[in-house]
Image 1 (cartoon, rainbow, N blue to C red):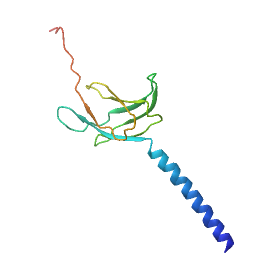
Image 2 (image 1 turned 135 degrees about the vertical axis):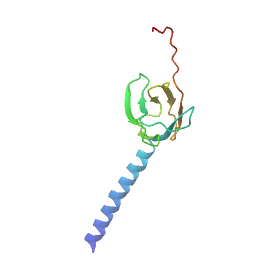
Image 3 (image 1 turned 120 degrees about the vertical axis):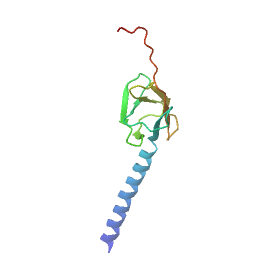
Length: 116
């Protein structure tokens, strides 16, 4: 009986340590959705990058089929950078936000000369 109590206490301790570690990791997770400004449709495979003050890449992910992303951040003082072909790159401060939804604007390019 005494061994069973010790074993039970050990399992309880291990589970509580894992629970604390898991809850701390969730505090550093940012999620959101990326959409097109014009159509409102979600954008697939947008690159979402955590960059520090020196513009070094810390973490990176891409949006899924529903335009959603989840990224574990290392420092809330860093920024998230959203890049997608044909759209303007956007930087967003993380701060204490845990949900960051972004609306991407199309990149407009002008053609100066056309050669026929």
